[in-house]
Structure formats: structure tokens, C-alpha cells
Length: 213
Ligand code: SF4
Image 1 (cartoon, rainbow, N blue to C red):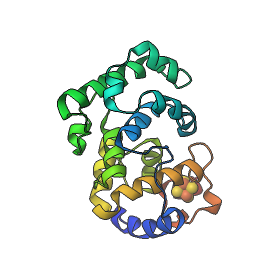
Image 2: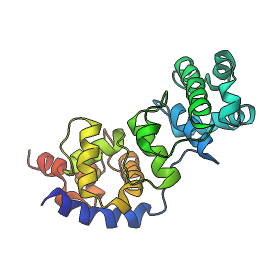
Image 3: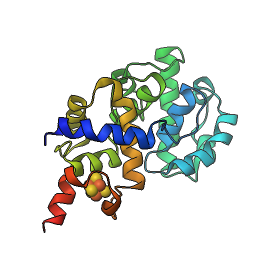
Image 4: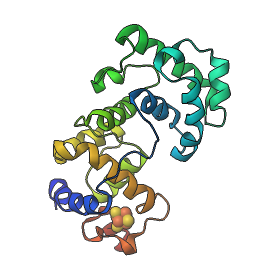
């Protein structure tokens, strides 16, 4: 079965299971989502959500954050992974948005990914959540699940993104990101995938190879 044929069978099942899913990060506007996404690198969404209310109270927008000192930002995010580098990155990010974009986040993922602290994955996450841009962010879960199912063979997130973009209809790209993350986070987990209760065993490359060993 080709990857395109597989995705045709997989998407309806994931939609039925996770249809309304969106990010688990808490945010109220583009600024807050951007900060939360930066903080979530190498950190759980739960921990980020515990940290951001006080952070947003003190730094409610890009302008305020752009004027902040790294030491103070650090004090608000010290329970997050890599607080030192993230403090500096957040301030640089805010200063760039203020100086180059009048305090408004650019919508184009290609411009977003040029901002300090925002890589390709984060840019796609932000643009797809905020503006339903037809892009798919490939994180560790999307990468693993896509390769196991045989939807993609690429060895880098960029290559897998390219392959997924060719087989997932544009209207589904943004939502498929969340569905694949949830499926990878709670079902097709890295160490103990729940293959015995999986609706995709018949088309999964990983399962077929494992079963035939
Ligand atoms: S069969 Fe197993 S490895 Fe394949 S998608 Fe399902 S849970 Fe993941």
C-alpha cells in the first residue's frame, strides 16, 4: 500500500478519535502562544502551563518583554529546562518583533522561522495553530509515528515534513499535526507502542516487521 493510500485510511480514524484536538499549551493570543512554544522546547506542556500565568502577568506583550532584563525573565522560568538560554532568546525574539514587525507577529512561516529562538518546527506550529497555515510541524512524535506507519522514510524532520506535505491534503495538514502528536504521545509511544490495540496494524511497517521477526 502506498503512503498516500495509507494516509487515506489513517486520517478518518485519527479524526474520529482526536477531531477537536489542538495544542495543549495554554495561550490567549499570538504573543502568549509564541512564548509558550519557545518555553516548551525540551520541556513538557504541563510544566510550561504551570509557569506561564505568572510570566504573562509580568510580561503581557512583546513590548514589555523587549524591555526586560534576562535576570528577571530567568526568575520567572527557572523551573523550565534551559532557563538561561531561553531568557536571552525570548528577549531577543521580542526585540526583533518590536523593531522589525511593529510588535505584530509575522504570519508567514518562512519569516517566523527567522526570528530568534523560533526554528522551522516552532514556526509551523505557531502558523498552523494561529492561522491554520497549511503546514505540518514535525516533532519527535510525528517523526516516529510517520516512519513506523510507513508514511515517510526520511531521516530528518525536514524530509519527513516534505513527504507528509505531499500526501496529506492541505486542509488537513495543520490538524493532522495534532492528531499524530496525540497518537504518538498516548498510543504509539516510543518505548511501548500499544500495537495490540492499534487500528493500524494491517498497514504499519513497524508492526509488520516486528511481527515477522
Ligand atoms: S501498530 Fe504499533 S507501531 Fe504501528 S502505529 Fe500502531 S501502535 Fe504504532
